[in-house]
Length: 613
Ligand code: AGP
Image (cartoon, rainbow, N blue to C red):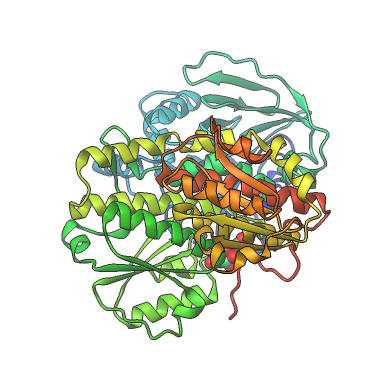
């Protein structure tokens, strides 16, 4: 998610904005910029990379003004460079905007504006916003009304702040949907705007939080809040007691817990702009693929490491089942040395949160050298795995700070589901009715994840019961077999408990000898085609004295007779069940590690991105 800071008052806004942006660095970003009103003229400084680059630029070419806005960008559309960095200025040079979110209909808006003669100077979706404000202002609206009219044209979720030399006594902030917050800080003879509390807490602790479809007209003496029709809205003024650093995690103890809870939004964001629910269609422009090319694909090799590889294992089942294309999953550190049989009818699909994992990049290079088409599913915009691919699907989860990957696991699960539907549609192996149903099934997923998150207290109680175990076995079958691997990885990498994921059907071939009262078994037994097999698996584990923790679907009336340790999940079509069944396992691992007092966000020996072999 991007960071936003705005100031209006009697002080020089530049240092306030730069320091505020620094407070938001934890959100992760790849470029930054600041704009101030200096002698009724808009001055802008922007640069790619870390804030230190922007600070150096401002030092060399200072800008001062009592009203200003700043931004740290986590790119979703357009490379992370100075040209695409915010703030974005309009054609007249009199309007400037910073934006957090995704303009889902930006292509249509760009075409409309370009047809009217607007020249664009960036590759971003955000730039359409400032040109629309300018257009409506020129048609006779004042700044606030021009922003309202603009917001009515935008699809998606947004946080925006606009400033204009035409009305130099105010900044206008607005929020649509859930693209990060918009908070107004109330000072004495000065006021602040930010995307998150840490940016302004050192100046004021009196704040108001804009809700969706609300706008604030902020001058140095007043704040006027309205809805998008211009009707006044009364917002409560809250006093924040958090310290700035704590606020970076909001009400969460660790970034990992925050990111687990961000999955309702991150799954919404990864769907954004890719699904037409009315038509029941998926469009993945990023792959630059037509039907003829799609029909030529003979097989897909998914290559990744760790959690990303577990997502790939789910992807294999999704793509084979829906698109009827043979898929193999190759661990990148093996694939890179396997002299694989790959040709131009093969797609090598890399999955990587960081986009910089050495093994995964080497595997991509191996595929490229053997003539394969190269795709990737990546979170970090501008990373190598994004740049070197022939087509890249961005996870769009925003930066993931916790070393243990959570939202960057569920997002690729959805992206792989979208890919399967898209390929099946292009290749004609998916009839329209089935395609429509598969797309409709996606709609409920973010809310169902939210339902799983609401059950955190029950998960925490189970974590407390099992927190001192030294070993744990995770068993799953079919599409939930990879979730057994992922659940075990989550536990071992942050709690240091020895945990092993296993295909449940394999237990009788040896590993069942492990099970006794000191080897609890986590059994993934949701309502899916392998349910009955998992029930017998649970019975076998119990017969050997093992404690069983079962992931079960709401309403199940067999499992409560077998064990009291149940992680309940809502019902979901089985092709989407991994997105749901992993949530309680993420929380289970998190709470065990947290209860054990460990450094959840920075586990020993681990790095967020393994950029070396
Ligand atoms: C997962 O929780 C770990 N942090 C690790 O397995 C990670 O998934 C792996 O290193 C791959 O990282 P990437 O997705 O950035 O390529």
